[in-house]
Image (tube, rainbow, N blue to C red; front, side, top):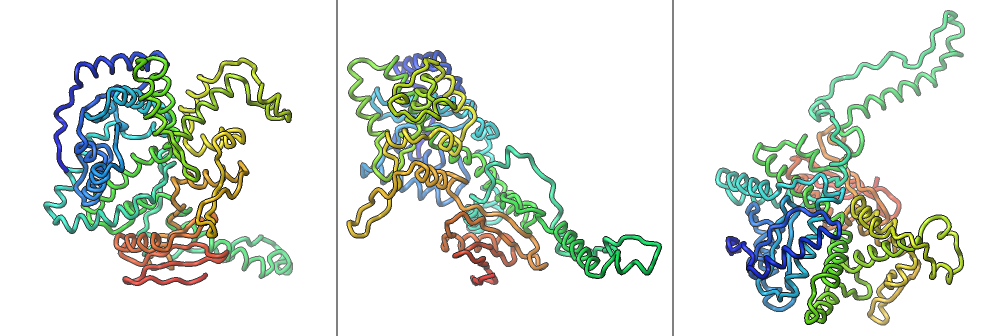
Amino acid sequence: MRGSYSDSALPADLEKIREEIRRHVAQYGLDPFEVIFEMVDSDQINSLAALGGFPVRYPHWRFGMDYDQLSKGYEWGLQKIYEMVINTSPSYAYLMKSNSLVDQKTVMAHVYAHADFFKNNYWFSMTNRKMLDTMANHAVKIRNFMDRHGQDTVENFIDRCLTIENLIDPYLPFSGAKKRTAVSSLMDPQQEQLPAEPGRFKTERSYMDSFINPKEFLDEQKKRMAEKIKKSKTVPAEPQKDVLSFLLEYAPLEQWQHEVLSVIRDEAYYFAPQAQTKIMNEGWASYWHSKIMTERVLDDSEVIDFCDHNAGVLAMQPGRLNPYKIGVELYRDIEDRWNRGKFGKEYDECDDLMTKAKWDRGLGLGRKKIFEVRRVCNDVTFIDEFMTEEFCERLKLYTYAFNRRTNQYEIADRDTKKVKEKLLFQLTNMGQPQIFVKDGNYQNKGELLLWHKFEGLDLDSKWARETLRSLAEIWKRTVSIETEVEGQKKLLSFIDGEFSEKFL
């Protein structure tokens, strides 16, 4: 990867356009971070894209591989990156030098809307707004480790960490940290002293003792007490979703390994809200760039070019979801519904289709509502709350299945509930399986036991094996995961370099 980013000042004509668009952004009520635009060529923007939008990241082969893939895609005409913006304060955005003037205007309006979303959406509120400096510090730290311990050694450990970087809890930053018992107390457990006979009732008449305190009752109470003590000594006491945090706290890591894993975890949490709000964020930016361009900025001679490029961005093929299209159309639908009062008990209970189609209470609450939605929702709540049957019909959102006879994907179901269920399933937990740490001292051997929360979809075997292998290298002992196959519990384990499977 190569390229210099010193050529950051906008040309005079683009600076004038930027100032104009910034005024329009404020007039519409948007409140973005200040944005610093930099002009880059295709080589530079591909380099930035490979690094997640940051000019400096820690050294690793995957960034070079991503850069090579992006460069070839651009050279062969398969893809082109028009813009890029990162969630920092101020936000940094990159404009392609080769863009047409219409594209530059569109990108600026689009970027300012992204910066507004970053600043005001709840799910970004816990992110590090100085991540540009943090990424540079991470790069220096890991380069120092490579100088000290060898590039291959550190890079191989990073490989293991990247395999499990998705094993975090995206909601953890909003819940507060909880204290946990040290795992060392479990690996060398102290004998707990049980009461001789827990649950025994006192009696002054010995002949009544067998009736008041039957042996079966005392045995049951003793068993419950033993299970309670055992559970209290389990680490974690309840299944813990942030696997990386658990490893940082309990895994036998060298200091430099602890630091590297901490870097991977910090960056995973920084990027998590972007995955949680992809549809909303792109929809918000598309909504506002369309409005600003068509109502304030476009010259008459630019309208056709803008419409042509914008239609390409929002195009959606049957069977595929375009987050730009779904997002912008849903915002527009919400605005229209709240302007006309098409919500609430009276509207929902109306069963006359003609009346509902003409429904208009003239409330004019649409703009206020979409700003509220932008502030509090993520993709899951956005889709769950506001995707209606009428919306799905208008955008032809159906569930599809592959027909082997025709060798094509065909509509399998038009039921809105099933469409929403399938989409929400894909969005929940960013599309990843729900994995928890269940026991850090499994079978009292210091082994690590994970639990897959089964939600109707089997674990991918290849993914599960690579995850177990990476975890075992970090944990230094056997690692297992409990899942479900055809209604029966199954245990997958990685023991001494070998995989094993058994039904429980």
